[in-house]
Length: 489
Image 1 (cartoon, one colour):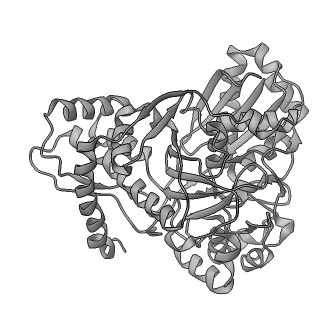
Image 2: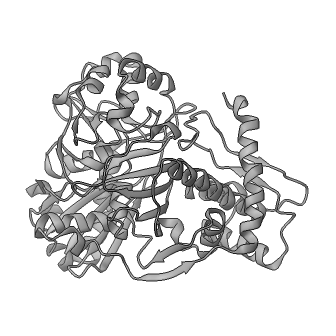
Image 3: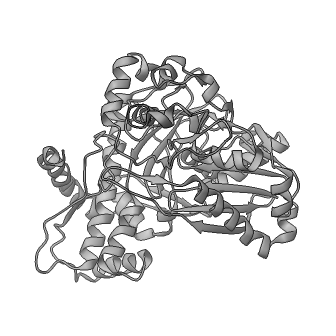
């Protein structure tokens, strides 16, 4: 048995996986995001640990024998967050998250002070990354910056609570702007620009390596042995492991809180100018490129709450029913899904969500339909950025919570004009991948033997009628952003 723990933005998910690669049990615990000011997005690291404890507690209550048989634990989690600890390991302030947009000026400052930043880290400095957050703290909270002993990423704070080790993996660390992504080591010039050095950083491991051992007290509390904890991966790299996306050209779409278009590369091929991210994969000697949209399934959650829908699933059913029965309005409602700003391709932390084209006849289902289409169009922008970078894209799988909706899949396939592959267990995502990384770290098996692709449940082809419609509507979507962009700032 192996456990994968995924620290998401909206919840912690824990998956228990047997040696045959089957999910035996799942548990989750919700998380809240605090937004004390415009552009701010923060969470309390203590809440992460409480959620992990609660989710593992659920498994202990329902699967105690299986939990006792666990041989290893893998971690994945939301990337880019800044967890600041003092010399006693105490948290100094709330963690600044990946979708926080306060650091635009610090990004410009960082690129000016470190001219080689893009070529070495493979990425343009964006407010969501970790390094500019530390510049912001240095300038606005100098008394806290002076007390920093360690800077950890979110999942690595959970690792610290589990093992007492300050450790991270290559894929997650590649999203800090402090890593030399080609050489897979810390980049001293970028650290120095933020008032830090290697002593403030965790030790680096490949995702398939053991990074520590579960503390005896935690092991006893959870009802398992003092098992190894693998390096793990950032949520997207771990999601790729779960989906078996490990060979060059293999790709996936992740429909989580954010949206990710992920493609595996066998060499380091940075192309940051269009907002394409180049990171280490969570397996050795492999990299990946990503286009990232900051709001994906979270847009659906938001509009369901805004319109009083019973749930996201109920709203999806309502939108599908009206679309297939022909009872929707004229279908011209357009949505810009930039509720938290945007990364690829705009790198615009000031971008905001927009509904355009409402009439007296606009219904709740119309709002939902526009959201599904708007997220799909944002993915098209990301796909174009990857293709402009010369990235070959082969088969594309779909993972994440949004993978449960075949209706959304039809919209996405038609907008992207390519078939999308749905696999069994696709909604397990990063937690399942983390469990696989745990298995490899313990067993020493080859990555190819463990990280097989799950069985295909369906392939959704583009709908020719929708392809034609979305080709036209994409023009409106892109023009709308250009027209209102100056108003955002």
